[in-house]
Amino acid sequence: MPETTTYAKALNTALAGLLAGDERVFLMGEDVGVYGGAFGVSDGLLDRFGEDRVRDTPISEDAIVGAGVGAALTGMLPIVEIQFSDFVVNAMDPLINQAAKLHFMYGGRANVPLVIRAPGGGGTGAAAQHSQSLEAWFAHIPGLKVVLPATVQDAHDLLIAAVRDPNPVVFLEHKLLYKTEGHFEATDDVENPVAKIGESRVIRHGSDLTIAAYSIMTIRALQAAEQLADDGIDVEVIDLRTVRPLDIGPVRESVMKTGRLVVAHEAPIPVGVGAEVVAGVVESNALDYLLAPVRRVGAMDVPMPYAKDLEQAVIPQTGDIVDAVKEVIKS
Image (cartoon, rainbow, N blue to C red; front, side, top):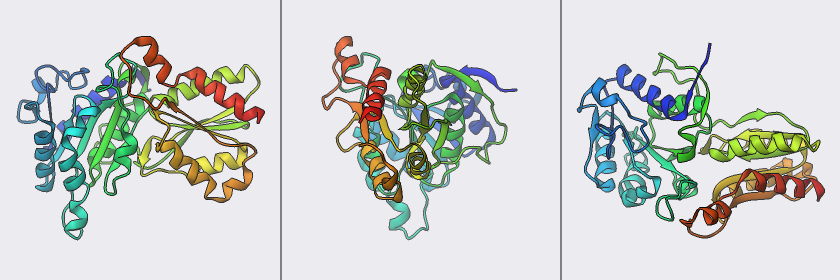
């Protein structure tokens, strides 16, 4: 029977299983060893697997990711933890110009099975340089895969899938999800992932409107759907789970049933993943089924404030999704 655990513990269990099951796997990053990670995800792994497999690194994201690219090219399966996703900016050359491109530049003769784990998103009062949602930036790069699990089970299953993928994967974990709890079932088979990167999933069925979301906004979409049910509005929720590759098929099928669509993400609206989801719908025959204009819900187009009230105003909350749904229903 599935047990209940936290998002962070599910990630820790996946990491432990991967390290135990394959000697090519190793974890490295700032404070992942003795300290157990900035958010406690790697707690206890150093004692269990030793410093060769769980490596504390200097404070240089460029060097950490560069070392990961080299290790992956030589047959290792490195998992690199960047303490905040914002700091991947310091490693964009090895990630974008090397990891994402080498398979193609070498005519398919080389693979870069590198996983970059990084906490992202706001809500912790960490201000502009520690609270960004950069997934659209990473997803724009051919050769990268971008994963944003919302649930405890997906955090575990998709991390295993990411490590088993021969391509570089950016694995973004929302900071506010680490302490959330959910049903969880571990697997002893880390060589055959249960989840598959690039598959969206309907997690709540409904008939009046479709909400497509990912990461923490999936949780808020579910909360909004429950509130809207009290008003007689039956909402279907689709968890995109990964934004590169983006599985738009379930969204199209849902829209053809409900006739209405709201797309929600924490990142600012301009040039965001939401625009790509909308394009994927309106460029298909699902367009003919739309009964109302599509709405996007996202953060304000400003750097993240430090002040708590301002931060909450910038980041889309459950109420913002509820309001957007009601506007679409009325239109």
